[in-house]
Image (cartoon, rainbow, N blue to C red):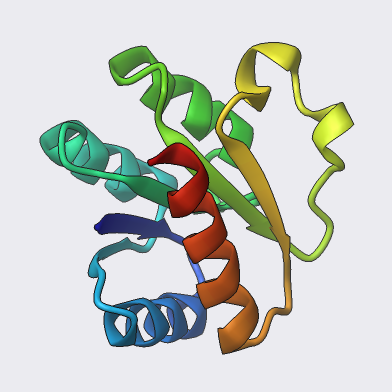
Length: 122
């Protein structure tokens, strides 16, 4: 599976890449919302899951999901943040295929959540 990780913290990107590649996934990382969206535009037909920091320096995770869903309305997205909203706080139009993971997370929590999401959308 191909996973796009968008986070402005280099340590998070490195951790996610290491953990997800160890699980057999093809991982692409981006260090900002703008870079992430450009990468998504170039690869949206092959991205199975986008893992997005809720509070990027240049755009919110929700705004980024909204833009991504203009290209692929069914795109699965995992929002990750230390103070991410509850699913009930996410606008209804964005709730389908949107999942949450609180930071900080352990490697096992990330790999388990990704496996759960990929199983649910398969």
